[in-house]
Length: 340
Image (cartoon, rainbow, N blue to C red; front, side, top):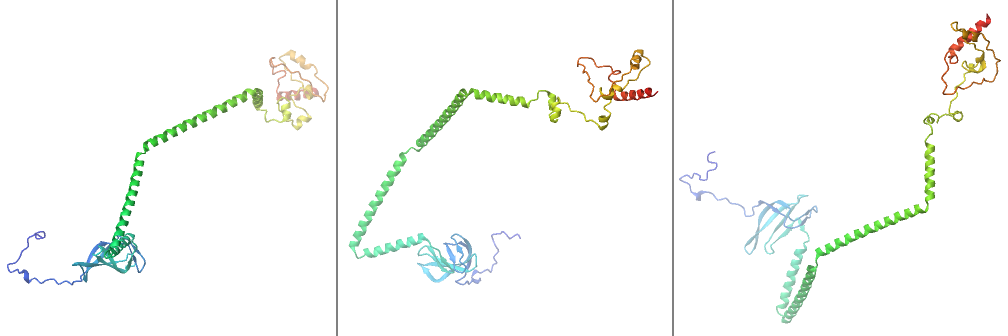
């Protein structure tokens, strides 16, 4: 453990590096490297698209018997991300690119095709000009004409840019804002003018038709008076039948069957006249009054009872304000006296 980080190792006195056997590795040995796909490709087995820049753990080897100006060419083996089919491509130092070899097809790349086309056209032109001086003159004239056209187009673009540079965009924005402000003020004034015209029309109509307004007010007052009762107690008689309201709002008491035949005990007419009040021995005046006969013929018409005014004091309970039970007792005493 003490020699784990020691830089100086122990060499024995009889150490001879020439005696160490050399490691013999095959020339086509493969190494595992990490790389990215150099171009877009499509797997031939499953049709999966593999885009440029996708990372793979690839196997790298040196291609035998292939050199470009003394530079070795390397081959890479990757696997499809979907079907795990093997795809191989190798370096192309002549074109500073990679070349697809097996397992996939390279997708269309417009930039590379344009470059190849330009190179092909340039090569054809050089071959034509090699033994034809007139062709050289024609190509130079064409080139000069194209340069003049390019310069004219460039000048037009410069003039256009200068015209656009002279335009004050900030001023245009300020003018547009002022225009919007004026429009808002104008709309506001129009709204106010329309509102004033409507108010004037309403006032003129009121001045022309004062009678109609008075009639409406009077009808409203009448309806209000009808809805409000004259007396607070009228609310209690609002639910009574029409006959009760016709009789002054007083509901007639229900007449029992025995009262129809005999009559009520407290009634002034009918059998009430035959009732004789009980005499008391203490007062001689009342005795003389009681000795007088109070006989009156029984008539079917009810007796007329004089109503005392509301300001008179109430009668004494001993004379006219007797209850129905006291009258019943007096009636029984009078029958017993008559029989004797």
